[in-house]
Image 1 (cartoon, rainbow over the protein chains, first blue to last red):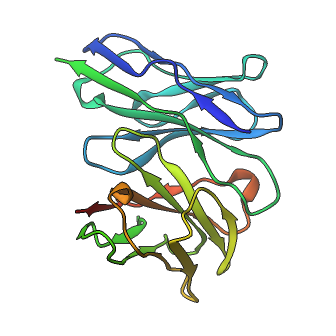
Image 2 (image 1 turned 90 degrees about the vertical axis):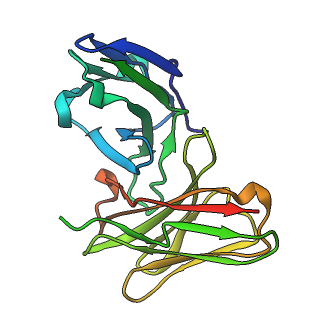
Length: 116
Length: 115
């Protein structure tokens, strides 16, 4: 069965610090990979996605992620965080298939708190 | 740009009552997904529809049913509500036919509280 692991449940950083959130997935086939962000009291917003091609993908708000196939990883990075990045971050995968069954499997989320 | 619309945003019900949640996808999106997010948990897939037909089913209780209508909006019907049904219910929509590069866009969610 598909599963997604996010190793950091809570991360506390000071402004301007660099961020890296880990994400590993377990699935035997080809997948699409996503990072979503959920600001307090808000809905899930897409940060970035990987379908194919360049394994380094850039998203909104200065975030980027690198797909390393050999490690089944898709870690999220940002060189310098801001207080406004305080949110919960979810890694998610779905299978790359021709059928209409593309449900997302989410990781347990990482709560990021950025201190001013 | 238009986003996914969900209504109501908040709903308070008593045990054993019924609830109906509505989802209006982004225009031209014909696939709808429902997810349930319990307090402090990650979203869990419930059910999905493509072109008005159920396409996949996850951990959705038998007390719940859903459908997608001709205008592509979807409704999640929940009966015999239990305390454990209290959660945030998200709807997501995606674009027709692009299953291999399916990007799901989420609505604001309906927060259901069962007393």
